[in-house]
Length: 74
Image 1 (cartoon, one colour):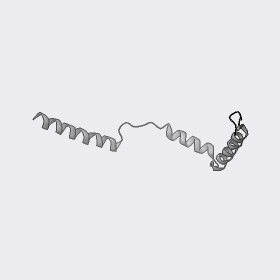
Image 2 (cartoon, rainbow, N blue to C red):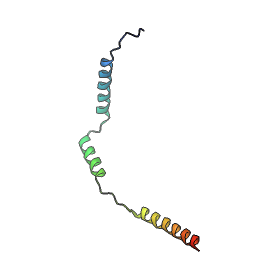
Image 3 (cartoon, helix red, strand yellow):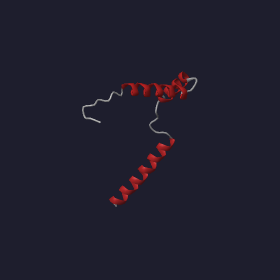
Image 4 (tube, rainbow, N blue to C red):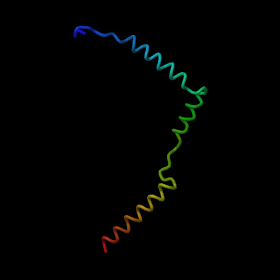
């Protein structure tokens, strides 16, 4: 191979893109619009800052910190 040779891979890239599109279409669910809507709706649900487990962990951490601080001050 010479350094002046140029390789044209555009056709290969196009063929690869076509194959990827076919694979994506075959692996997509039949009701892809419904799946997309439900995924977007689940993503848009409001996030709670403190769920039950998070709040419990926060209280436990605060209790340990408070106890350690009091022991240090004594």
